Length: 257
Image 1 (cartoon, rainbow, N blue to C red):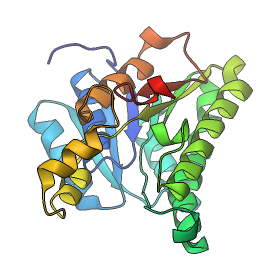
Image 2: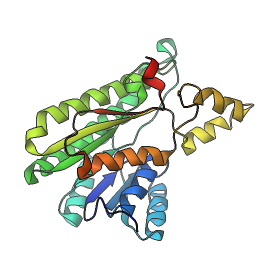
Image 3: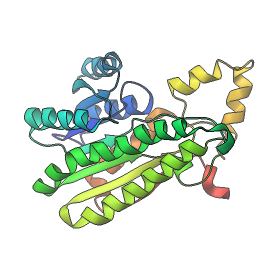
Image 4: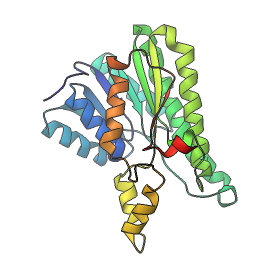
């Protein structure tokens, strides 16, 4: 397999059953990493693992709800028992909600906070102590362009992703001298299976795509593989001097903000 920038590293990616998480898992494996593919849906995680193994990579599927701290701790115990240490944690699992403040209920806010914020917190909390003990660890959190600038009709989502950016910076600042790096990726719109399925619900899917893509200066959505390339850079030693940053991959969306 070409390129081995993560040779011998143990990595874990949440929300890795499809879309961005699956692309990151595949790319890490291509670069020599052992990948724990975590998803709340075990069959989706196993599908990603099957693809990785079919390409000669080394991976295992695990299932957990990242919003449940006890399940995150169980995953940590499994990872440390099987591999001894975790080098790179990618918290990618997340959910969305469409609506303004008046179209958003408290239950919507709670649901997004539980997965998008508490899930990131739980996974970092589970693995940070063991990373500090060995003096090395990279944490990569998936935020969003909606965590840097406001996006119309996405109040709950933006609120949760702004929180992820803040959480990322706090971890980075608090633990930089202990060998921990923590960064977040802030994608614009990405052409994932979820987005593709949503587009099919419109009377004119092609027109809907053009409208959604128009927010990016490049006039298109990102591919999951493009986000995976950013994750690889942050996970590798090439980014050894990078911590506490929000890595914008938004096709120029924020350039005019």
